[in-house]
Amino acid sequence: MSNSANQSEAVDAYMARLDYPLKAEAEAIRQTIMGINPAIAEQVKWNAPSFSYKGAYLVTFNLRNPKRILLVFHHPAIARIPSDWLEGDYPARRLAYLRSIDELQARKDELIRIIQHLMTSEDEK
Image 1 (tube, rainbow, N blue to C red):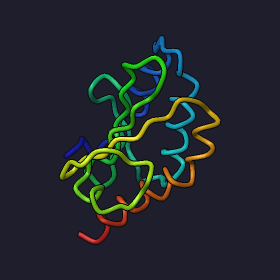
Image 2 (image 1 turned 135 degrees about the vertical axis):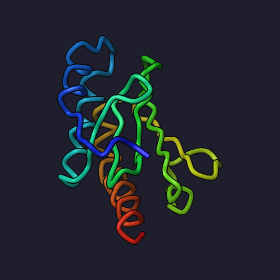
Image 3 (image 1 turned 45 degrees about the vertical axis):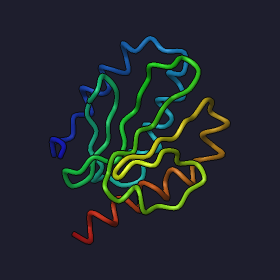
Image 4 (image 1 turned 30 degrees about the vertical axis):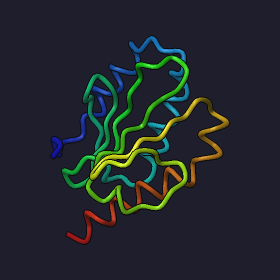
């Protein structure tokens, strides 16, 4: 479970000091996720932006690789979402990678669909 309070100011500060080759891409992904629903909260987790809904984690960035952003979807419902983009065969986690703004634009609808599906699973609880 995540902290239910939105910590956007902490994420803003994190992003302001972030020295990372794909910083613009990370910010664009962040804005895409936050634009899906005003009830999505963000915080810094694992030294990167992380997003939750109704106290349940949806996705956390991993910004260690300078050539691609790793998105870690860590929600129990992720295993039930069909997607050719999601990788890994874990019970409650899937991974996805983005390397550029162009790739984000190509995957944007899929990213939104996945997040919305995870949110719906929380709404149905």
